[in-house]
Every structure is written in C-alpha cells, then in structure tokens.
Image 1 (cartoon, rainbow, N blue to C red):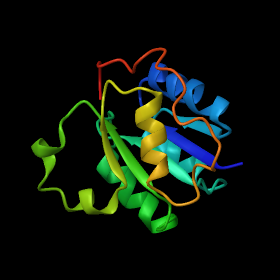
Image 2: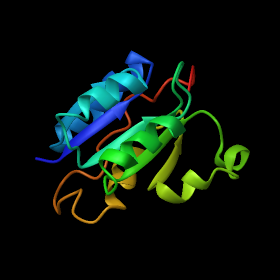
Image 3: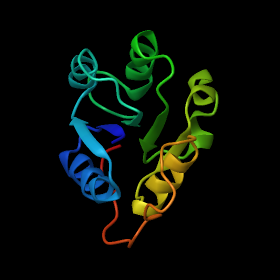
Image 4: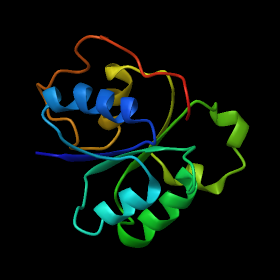
Length: 139
C-alpha cells in the first residue's frame, strides 16, 4: 500500500485529503505543521507528499528544502490558494510534481498522483465522485 503524507495547517484539509485517498487504497498520514511533518519523516518514508505552501512558522518551501535533505526522491505536490504565476520565480517549482490550487477535489489529487509512475495502480478508481471540495481559507 502506497503511503501518502499530507501537510497542511488546516485540519479540515488534511481530513478531506485523507477521506479522498484512503478509499483509493492509500495509507494516509497527516501533519499540521512543518515541524510536525519533519518529525514524522524521521520514522516514515512516504511514497508521495502533498504539502501546503503557506503555513505559520515554517513555509512549505522551507519544509520542502528539509524534505529534500532527508528524502530527495520523494515526489511532492504543493497545495495552495496562491496561483503559480505569483510565485514562478521560486526555483523550487522545478522540484515538485504539481502545484494544486485550492479548492480542489478528489480527481485533482488522483490526477496528480498519476503523474508519478506506479503511484496509481491500473483498475483503481480514477477520482470517484467529487463529494466536497477543499476550503479556500488559509493556504
């Protein structure tokens, strides 16, 4: 079973992603801050990380830098309310799989996971329904 880590300071977002991905056959871990995620990564090597860009204390870019020191090959997708063009000058954009703008739905997450070979096995539900979207608050 593939392990997914979702890092977002909004607990509603981590619960929503978990709700979307567990029925798809993923083992989902959550962290609600950068430091919490980095502590979890000491004992966990996920197959994929969804990472919020704007979190208090430690931004997603800072967390990404630390992730790369420990797990340089783990695919990462950013979750954010800020469109990509507003931060295109960030060199880290080249180091991520996708940049998902909130609100998103299950299909958006599955399509992002499909960009990584072997993440979504043939025959798995490619997004099911769209029951619920991520909240636009925060980021």
